[in-house]
Length: 107
Length: 122
Image (cartoon, rainbow over all chains, first blue to last red):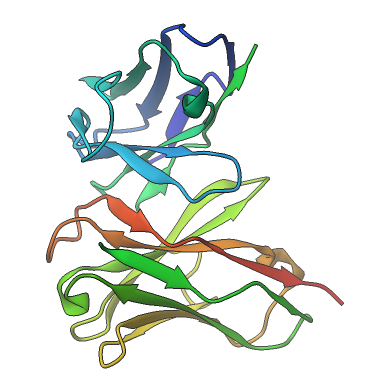
């Protein structure tokens, strides 16, 4: 199965910062990658799909990019609502797999 | 509005059977794959499998094949996840989630249900 490796495990940041989260696939997933945000006590919600497309209603401060098998989620001007855990997921190969998550916490 | 509403938290003993549900509304249930995802503190999110409500076709992760059964009843717009004999290691939050696009298996999940906490303890 494809292993998705996210880094770092935890990011301690301040409101207003710009953060970059990474997700590396063990083999190609083409652009079949999504990013999800999970706030404490809530279900995940999709932010980005097809590696770079923002989901409906997601603010422009969230952006996704791809370079080979490396994927990046960038959050600009971090707001208090953005603190939580972020997961990537590939949907190119069976079984679909998630990364282990990056926790974005308040410094 | 597309919504998935899951059944409530449950406490079971090892060896007992269980079926949890996911009721869909706001779209044509038979047109999108529905999946199940397990979340634990130690392993994060794990993709378990999918069901096509139109004909109950399923896809399973090898890690969960034979351990759970995923099904759907299109007459009542509801998907299910069931166990015949629970283990303590099945303790987790289980989410159902819909594939975003009609018909395709190469897809992301949107939206997700609110989650069902399953606790298995003697």
